[in-house]
Length: 377
Image (cartoon, rainbow, N blue to C red; front, side, top):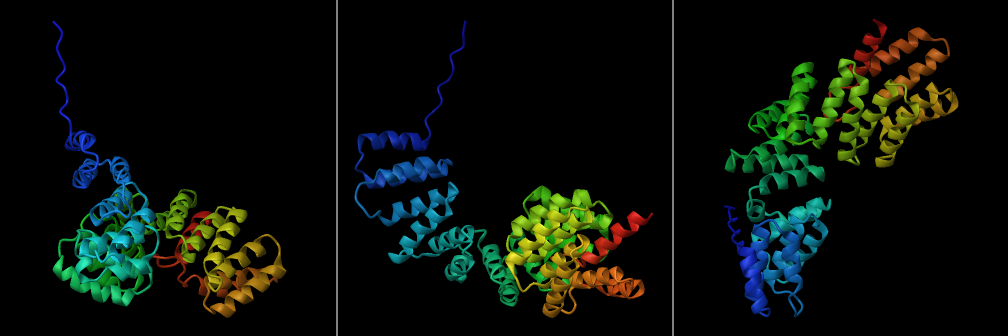
């Protein structure tokens, strides 16, 4: 005797869609069906339903659902357009403002996001406090981020994402004690773990830092600071080949952060890949042509490839931009060695070894020194 399969009960969205077939002009029913589709994780179905609305423009309820559907479907520009329409129509309640801020953040418009993140909208959704800190961080308003964050942290003491975001800001503000305080309150948040890893790397506890970066990357494989930190830690441990993909991923995520591309360039240079190093140094230069390390890194590559004239020119540019430039000092030492002035070159290189270069790490010099010791064994 064969068993008869129990038919699956239709979902709420399916039931509402069937009702809508019988009453296609019912705007309220259309909105309910679209909302149900969103609740069931079907943003494309919701968008199709909204698209069936006849008159233009869409009423506020449907326009809001259109924006939410676009967010769920990974179309932040479309979402921003929908929510901007609501704001223009005077429908700017805190949730709408938060959703617009989130959509703008996803398109890279952090200044535009901040325009929407007043006190009400920043706390209208669970991710709002962290979103505001991220936006302030992205536009370089670090002091304001920490000041605003102190109040948010007091009101939301269990918000791990907020604590992680504040730890990242404190790292970039060079306040290690504050960064550790926030990071320790972040729980398993990837930004908090990455911040702790950075602090451990700064303080020379290499294996502890690598473990923390590993945990951060388990939580979010794309975390830029954790990728850079893992790469810098591996570089410091002498494993330059393993370091490169981490540093490259971090640089890609940081995007226009020249220091990340500089770190990638050095990792490749230390593996003997001059062409790859030149490409990364040029990417850093494209991010900011006033960043001395970009010119200095290119100078080192020029000198290593025998183009001393270009190396001298780039070295002087880098030194004018920053007299303490790490790569310019290294390039100068190579030029002095080329001229047979070894002791002077060693003195310049020693000075270069203490110069900060990479984001989140203490110095590139520590990593270079570690590899140098390993190669001389």
